[in-house]
Length: 320
Image 1 (cartoon, one colour):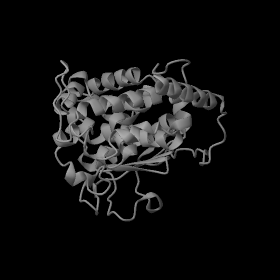
Image 2: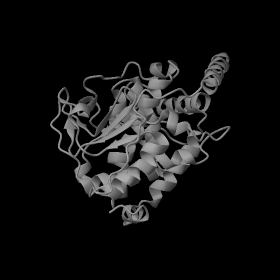
Image 3: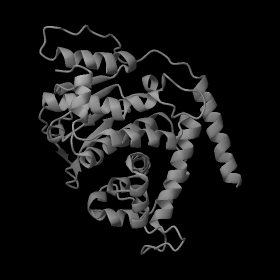
Image 4: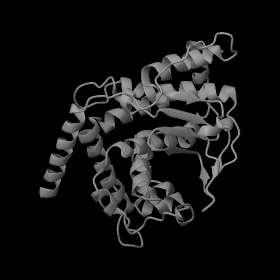
């Protein structure tokens, strides 16, 4: 009880300090160039300027740039139509959630302007981790950049595929950006401290059920505590109530309290729920975000994405 009270006090003090901090000038170029109406991509570029660059100072980079590309991988450019599809999808499933009342106290209309990634880079193909051969669907760098891979196989009419391969990764990488800005309680690190596999997580936890029985929502969570934190948050946001309950059941948790224990003698589901409670409190006290309100917004928008929905958005924004 004392520890819980102390944590709440620490969160409250940090959050108060965050609220009093003035929004200073950006270290990134905030100059917005006029869109060239002679370009074949004019309608798309105008959309990006209106809905990404002007309100949030986000550069949505759909043309491959050597300066921003990770040179250790052999990337190909994202095809233009897939880049357009992803742009309207990200606006709807990610950017627009922060316009809704997902906050505990005052509505923070500048939240995303202050805490958005400054660059979103698109690549057409996947990358592969040279250490463990795991497929890489994206990355985040320095708390300011999100890279999304494998755009050229994007199927906008497959809801489950969009969730698993793109939306989940987007929220995972954004969670890592928030973690770069504000620390989380070190108690989180202790929950699974004996079971992280920094180099071999993809092979040790190749079975998702095995990862969950050990207290990880998926294999990448077993890489280190920060990825564990981000994966727990992202998984909860994109999972429906039924999917989250199924995840916990796979982790050995039972509603009647008759939990299934793993070989180490503990219930992975209980570990996952303990991690989620820390994530919930961190969002509340540090960021003024109600995790369940945020999740409701994400769930509502995921449910909207059905056959033809992305095409309707492209037409709505008059993107040729």
